[in-house]
Length: 479
Image 1 (cartoon, rainbow, N blue to C red):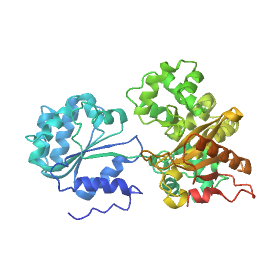
Image 2: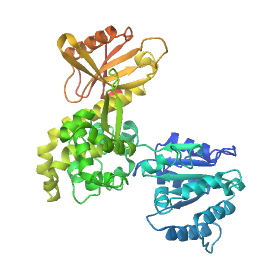
Image 3: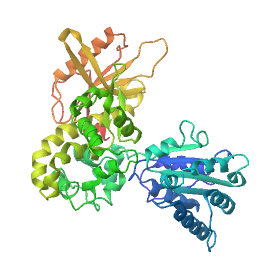
């Protein structure tokens, strides 16, 4: 089949487009079902609508409505696609039979699928039956894509004993744009400004247009004004967006507890014990909220590079970090339109609790994508790590630990140890701490013979930095 070129109005998303086209045009009779998920505002519907248009497919977008209403609307839209009139369906089994009968080939997309399963819980089982060897779908060469934003619901479609487990030939998660693509999308060429903006809105495409009406900061000088015009402006949709992101998750009921968990993480408490202490709770009490937030892709749990069994939690969505660290404590003033005073009093907190940790995560992202020429080999894992220093009765926090892939029977190779500073000049002292960490890891049995010491700086480096330390500044991160 002829390749399907990506339309010019679709920004980036080359990998996602290629995967969707590969699935939709696959000659295999077993490639019949695909699952597309991703948090809201990432452009899933935009991407699938472009694909349907390019392939002359059929797309039905579900809504919050009863089963009867959904079937009626589905019947009208399917009839319109096939020449007019209307189809009246008694149930989804009958609707699926007609769907595959009148669309014998090509692409079928059902968007916002979780809305349908909420009203019709048996629908995944009916789709499974349609995909069976004697099912309705086997009489058609059409490919079916199910798409949704409720990450927990979409994740459960293919897990455990779910009816559709083992049936999908595509499982695509549409993620936010990476930090470099995001800078291009916002039209920002200044790396320092790009980091600041990404610390607020991340790589969510919708925040660039619909949520701020195309308003982008023109320079570093304009950044504070942009914050006041957009995310702290009570008249803009972005103002309440972080609160809505949490409310949209179906399994979240006790909003106070979940906001407390997110607030603890945003304040710098990355371990389970630290989060619990910050909340005044016991560690077992927060297990369920942490699991729900992780399943919803709102937080991520990352293993410590050097301490087995220790994990760090981070918030995936920068806008939520901004809300929890800056906006929540200032909400009464912000609601009354006192944004300038609120921003003046919270800007230092923004730099320390939001930008600093976010810059560290961008540096880890850069390291994970580094080629073999940077650290001597392709990274197998990149994470923050803690190295115990018993001689000094302290711990050395390594911001960017790059490990080679594990090799059975051999010590784990440490490709690089990195220190990150956003607003402080990196000095010889920082390099010395990395050397100390390297020596301690060698004693613990790690292979550190070729470990590259790296300093990642947002504010530059001391002039007499040692020649054996790799210096990575903003131009390198965005190069």
